[in-house]
Image (cartoon, rainbow, N blue to C red):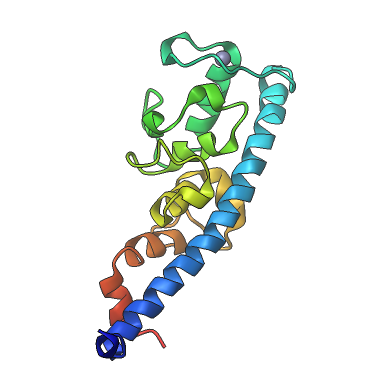
Length: 177
Ligand SMILES: [Zn+2]
C-alpha cells in the first residue's frame, strides 16, 4: 500500500485531493461571508423598493401559496438573482430551502442557488460540499462582485471549476506539480 502511494499517479491524486479541499475551504469562507452580506442587503432593498420596513421579519410562512408580503418579496428577490431562472418563479431549487428561516439564517438563502438535491439538510458552509458552494456562488448573480471574471460569459472561472474539479481524472491528466 505504501509503495502504491509513492507512485506518480497516487501522488497526483493526493495533490488533487488536497487542492480540492483547500479550494473548498477558501470558497466556503467566501460563500459564508457573501451570503451573509446578501442576507443583510435584502431588508434594505425591499424597504427601498417596496416600502417594507427594514426591521420586519417573518418565521411562519412555509406554504408557497400563502406567503405574507415580506416572504413573497424575499422569494421574488431570490428568484431575480438566480442566473438560470425561467418563468413562474422556476429556477431556484425551492425544495432545498426552509422559507421560515429566510429572515434568520443567511445559509437558507444560499441553498436557493445550489444544485437541486443533497443540500436541504446542510446548515452552513462548513457542511456543504464543493459543488454546493461553487454552485451557490455561480448561480447567484449578486455574487458577481466577488469575481474578476465576467460570469455571464460562456467561458468563465466558475464553469471551468465546476466542469474540471469534480472530475479527478482531468485533474490527474493535468499532472499537477
Ligand atoms: Zn411570511
